[in-house]
Image (cartoon, rainbow, N blue to C red; front, side, top):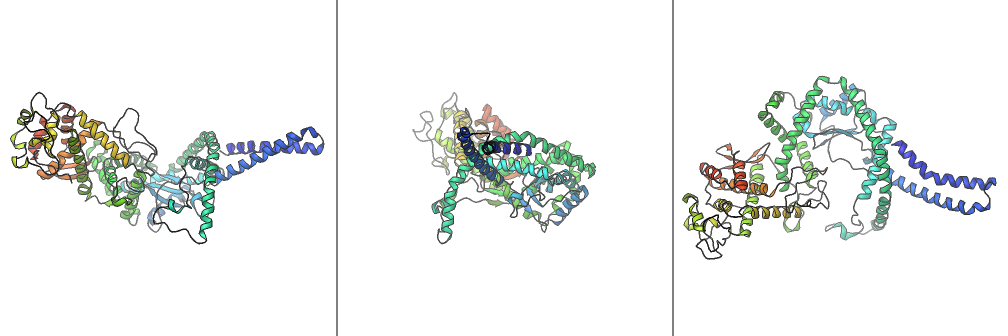
Length: 604
């Protein structure tokens, strides 16, 4: 990297060197009057190049690379953790990290933040960033073994050449990011500051005007410097990668003597923690985040999820015996408050500073905390009701289908008597409008028979026994889900600006994006979405008519519990109904569970 920087500096000085030669030749008489035009042309070009180089160098040197979002852990809040890290540094004979922070991720690293500090002193030790799931799942000895090679990296960080090379790379990266950043509103414009901003008055007005006028010039400079920085970064990339690989290898070798026997076990726990963390985020946290709720104890949930995974997986069964040892989270004075801060940060990283949900009266939505005890009622039940409402709204829009090979009365006769709406409810069931059954139902056009009126499971089951009962319904639900998610797309670190559906997907459900742009979940097809909505309707009916309860499975997310037992077979029965039109298994399950399909489902 330093060689690339020196090469760029030499190229910038080359026209100036040529100008010096021409002017020196004039004084010595070797370049006569015929060289005047070349002398002044080269001198002007040299001045322009030096000016551009100075501006580019200043922009790169003053660049502020992005800092990873973390939760700082001060020494007074975790004296034991700081003592453990300092002891590691002493044993490794390297400088101790300048600070400790937690990240909602299964990773740990050193991060140089000298550019973000008030003094900006160079050569300071980097910040140790620790993945918060490690603190809650790992034991103290395992965490020490895991952090040993990371802390050992503070030694190379103190080397002058390595520190200088990293500063060059960070400056180039910041310059490229500044060039790609979209133009924001002028801070000197009161209207741009939004409602409630203080009025612009007094001696600060001139400063704000100057800053506002300088903003377009600053953006122009950043965009001009961006291609140069990108070129230099591309040239320095292989060298930077080789340097970091060498630094990592040296740190690993230095840490070999520290807790060598536990390092293999610690690495095994890293893989297990990552698996449980991924399941908890995608199956449990993400459904709550979409509603604007953030579970306040994500890291504690990791322990529950991994304990459940260890119970189910024979390969992980031996890991439960280690739970009797001291957990690493005991190194914190207040693990609960720290867990809450990290949990809120995780929601903001993945879905933005504000939740992607509509707010009443035009107010900005805010994240709402939810405890694990309230999760089934405030998240699971709410999700089921919303999906069931979307399903019945799609049925309302599509109207009543044509039964297969029989008239409407014959189709209704095929449904057991105990599963029809009672005659008293046929006038106007609560929760939804009536639908026309056409000329085959014996009812006037625009009216419906009992099973086709209102939000009932009988109406849903009859839909799958009709011609075209699934394709049109799946397409409409997919389009509606895509429309709602597009309207509530977050504008934050986890969002992808300008993202559009991939070609050929139509209204397919788009997977949410993680901060690195990787999908948290694979996109769901229309049939999968339809199966989820039918399952939600069944769960709502079971809660309303059979005394079932919404619950939480630590690995699979929302779950239905009937008589204290999880209804694990329900998704497969619904999938058979959606994909193959097989309703016998689901009807038998409903009868065994005491669910009454003819009763209207509560949607709110």
